[in-house]
Image (cartoon, rainbow, N blue to C red; front, side, top):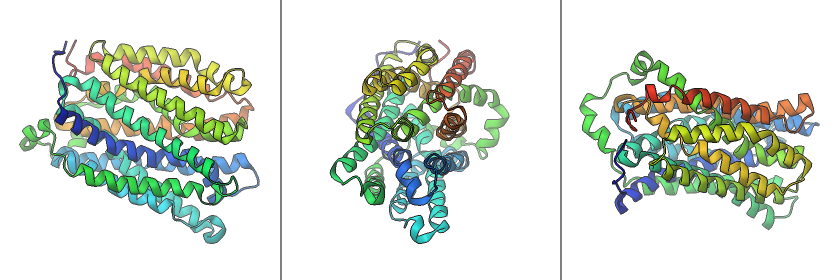
Amino acid sequence: MRERSATLSAAGWRIVLLASLGGTLEFYDFVVFGIFAKDIADAFFPSTSAIVSLMASFGAFATGYLARPIGGIVLSHYGDRYGRRRVFLWSVFVMSGATLGMGLVPPHARWGAVASATIVLLRLIQGFCLGGELPGALTYVVETTPRLAPLVCGVVFACVTMGVAVATGVSLMVRSLLLPANVPMYGWRIAFVLGGLGGVLSFILRRSLEESPEFARMRALAVRQPFRELLRTHAVQVVVGCALLAATACFTGLFFSHLPAYLTTVLRYDPREAIQAQTIGVMAHATGILVVGWIGDRVAPRYLLRAGALLLLAFSYSFYRGLETRAISPTLILVLAGACGGLTNGSFAVLLTDLFPTRIRFSGVALVFNVSFTIFSGMSPLLATTLIRQTGAPAAPAILIAGGALLALAGSLPAPRYGGNVLGRA
């Protein structure tokens, strides 16, 4: 077992929070697309069918995830060779520029297909940058405070989740302050502009960060081709990691990005009620992640992940049926769902970093994180919408969450055997 006497100093908290801040703002930038998917669909992907227009919008959403593995490979290569700091410093700056641009692109009515193509291109840039941001932040905090790895990983992903809460809060503010007719016209643009400006602020604050101590000690031993060595020596760990992340990635894609449009377009909830319920659910989810990160220093994180996967497997259908029938308050349902998801989302990150040694950790974390989120998170809104259309069953997305939970359970079984680089072999 790791020693539990370690404490995080004020300087340590500052480092962890600054590293997490980029994830907060970048996830805000990335997820706000899903939150305003219906408005973006109307502006850039018009169709006579609302569900077809929404599917086109989620298709553009998915393209951002397709760029993530490429961004992860490229950025983690430089991160493992030259340092973690500069990679996630500049990734947030470039992504913020793309987010700002998305808020300024003229609609399809003015630019036609060029407007749609521009949105997709900017979405690809977002995904490329996010491919290195979160893996870099996780790698950085684990190497800065290895004795408190479960807690600091929990802090990072809790902050990322709060970025989603900020995005839903901005959506609620926009829908409250503007006339309903103005929200599809320019209300969503305000959210993108705010995200872009917030990213610039994050870049300025992060410039004070130094390189991670672990990487600084082994800089002279840095691998020339970290990605190639990763595939040669740790291919099994990559597969195990992808399975471990299945529940987290699927839950994230549906809970953060698909849910707003699902509630308003499919179930016909009032937009303000839907956003308010999701905001409270996301805040409960972030709190759960922090609690799980704290517990993870006392209880093996793989047990916490298994508990969360089992709960999602058992109750995902009930959650969706409750929303469909309106028999229970949507806020209560989303709080309960967020609490269940907190067990997997609060434990996956430290288990992932534990699979890889320092010399190739950034590359390993980036590859697993981005492949998993591309497959299980980026595609889940589109797949969920397609399932609903094909089956006529509003609760069909529960199938995706159940499948992700089963994969996570399977991945948690061999994790102790192939890990031990951060948590030890206990």
